[in-house]
Image 1 (cartoon, each protein chain N blue to C red):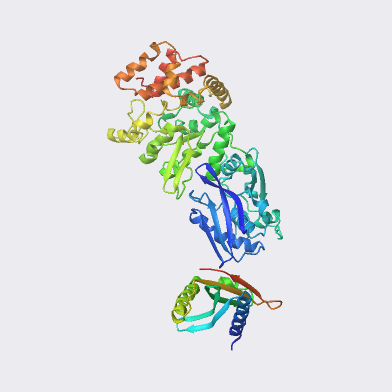
Image 2: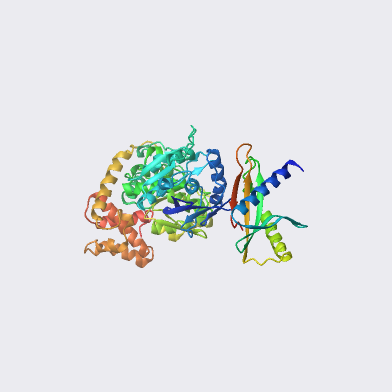
Length: 506
Length: 118
């Protein structure tokens, strides 16, 4: 029976589905058809496979070849299927031993010369294959290090189609080719930034520490040159390393986005993304034709998303961030399917007080009209700011003064605070105070009603929303954890309220 | 007769011998009308088979079967209908086959019979 079978993986968002690639060779007029919902890039695979097979010195069977990607209802895209299609076809033609190719997952794009080219998203694809019980995987040599990050995998790297065919018993010379290197955009290696570089700004420094400790979102408002950008860039340095599960998830996102260098193993440090304020919604939340690709918000998963000059971003971009802020996940719906990308980032916003940036203190130097000022801050809508736990104002910095603490000292306190949270939340699905829902916070607050009296008054006055109350309580828990207390005291709630309202109180 | 026509003629002879060997009754060869020509018309039991024969001396420009294009097959189909209209044969069904003949410089001719290609 002229039927060849092998396996590949289709990625929809970060979820991999194992796809059975079948090739049927019928004795009829020579033709090559590909069925099973391929997109344009995948339909071109026929021509690449045909050229690669001929270039590798293998005979092209004069048969009516039908390749099916099963399940046929799942939309498939990209060039990852080339190798699996070629191997299934060769198995059907009995150019290779069919039993040896059966049950092996093949990933990789073919060049016309028969060389294997690295592809994106190998980590989530291999993880899905192993989870589905198919540990034997063949990948392009440039992706081998990435595939081997998955526990329990039996990954093999290959340079060319001829090498793979020879492994399965084909009578073919394996050419000595130069392997195609992975074209991963090398992650911009950031020099280690130290908090000691920031002059003065002890209040903002404290806010940054609280933000790092509890995983809270942060807004910094201040005139130009006060260190907002410097502080934000130093936040990742205060955060603890990613847990094993998080590291796999973060690396998978970056693998799909093509911004990951497998030579250094899993990404273990929290990522930092700072899109420019001309960014489009598609670049921030993800997009693209067919099944969308992850954007900056997903690349900042378990790390920091920093929007410098936040009011300069388009309203559409700022509003699209509301869903991930609430659910920690981005669900992108397109005609071709729905992609889910994790996006549990820590949002850091920086803004000037007004377009000219001088409306600090009495604002005597400010040249903006009041309507300009209102419109500028109006961009940061109420619903967005309501989700930001910490909102602080930075005054003009003075040179000199005593140097601040270095990052290492603050990071140690943050780590201790995170450990306290993890111990308290051990039986729950949450890990940081910022993730805990309001009901749980209130239930574990204790019997002291006087704690919330001040908040109740703020709600009555209309200066704090009910969601705002929960958010103040979250920060209060973090302040208590930093101070080593078992539960927030009245002072913690008061300070949390101040931190939320840019020092204005409620 | 030009060389390529001689090759085609020889291929058709091989194909006719091939189908006769399989016990088919050859009804017509090189049936020609204004719209074109049928290479071979034969009866396989009670099924009428219209055979397109394609002969090549090497695979330098592709296998002979590859040269049978959808356009050529469509013409064979039309001609098969014309043939049936002008003959008093009543087959149970009609089928179109392709016989690809490869005539290498050395060695025996390779005859490949593709059954039911449309």
